[in-house]
Amino acid sequence: MFVRIGLLTLLLAALAPVSADSGKSATLPDNYCRWEVVDYAIEESLCGLNGDARRGQKIVSDSHLGNCLACHQLPIEGIEAYGTIGPPLQGIASRFTEAQIRVRIVDTRNINPMSIMPGFYRDPRLINRPGEPYMGKTFLDAQQVEDVIAYLVTLK
Image 1 (cartoon, rainbow, N blue to C red):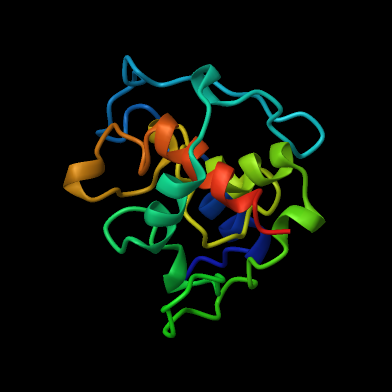
Image 2 (cartoon, rainbow, N blue to C red):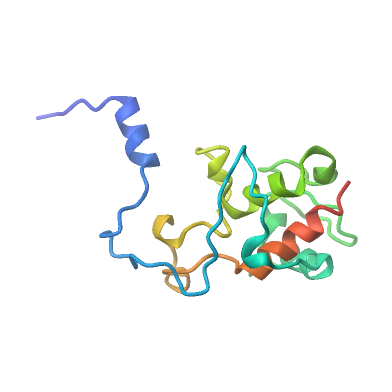
């Protein structure tokens, strides 16, 4: 017996948030800072932290941290291999405000639900099948996210 499932039904199921009883922790980590999206932007820095652009550049190019070079071209001297899945990030600060960049780093699915870019500070309860080291955690901590943003706002 075959059951016909509409494309819209499959799409809605794929985009549905993961429920708390999916085996993941139902609580947020103690150090998780809540954030709010207003008009496609997150105005407040995470946890009230200030970022450091030098640390941010290291994070975006580190394959064990941000690994942004896997998908984006960045103007980093000495880097010749980079991905082309995402848009080039040279000039991003000319196109977006700091708050608009923040929402893209924190969880770009607030802008494009179909994005394949990881939400680096997404609510860990909503991360679908994270690797063991990331169970109940964000991919980057709040300071690392603010460091990345500090670097990206220098790219005018």
